[in-house]
Length: 95
Image (cartoon, rainbow, N blue to C red):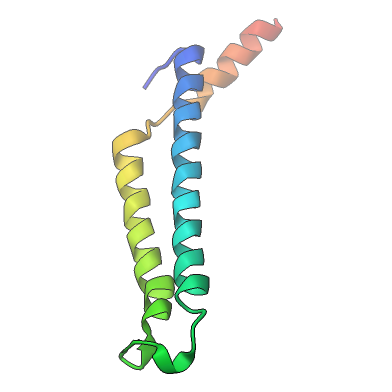
């Protein structure tokens, strides 16, 4: 897809913001499930298949959930940008 430099910068900015938001959401999920839910007396834990629920949420559900979110985000919001056009514009401005 051919974009002008202004459109390309706007798209890149949008993608960076989306990426940072996804990372922060994952960090909050990881921190909450690992340190808030896991910071109790082990005798009060709920277990699934012999593992504490906080561990299942932190190490299995979280990555699957956020990998799916990243795939969805890439397919819906990210645009493939031709970087060769950018290189051509830079060489034209230098001449």
